Length: 162
Image (cartoon, rainbow, N blue to C red; front, side, top):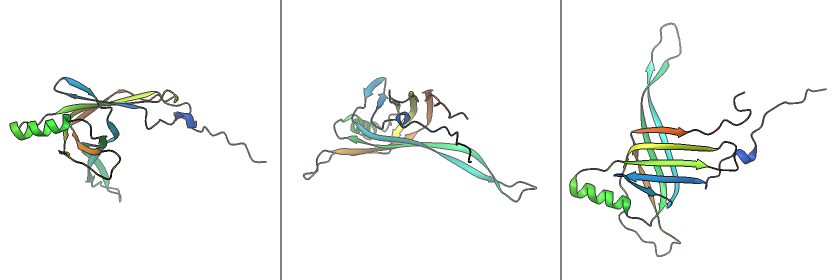
């Protein structure tokens, strides 16, 4: 007779709702509730180099730098980011800003996670648009960040730290 399987399985309720998040952007000490954002993703790309190793057929690898980028889509209902581009055009001084994202699904035992991105710069953006055949207007947002912190971590789910 086979032994019963004693597996710990993640509970479906512990997934994080894609819609339950907050996004705040701070520009020059002014904080904006970017409730107009539809989706957002920030990623880190690590720069690695090959490391030859005496006594090993396999080449090793070592990370020596990172680059942070973000992208998303937002409703076309604010001019804050367009004003940053106008200021850069007129002054030659680009404006760095901060983005704070909090995921918080009260149904999940994972709880909250907050990540703050520092020294963000956009790659550019939409100045004006229309769509006579569309339902609503949206626009992309893309850029880079120079640093980040994670002031709130998700709670480890039961069984995760096996």
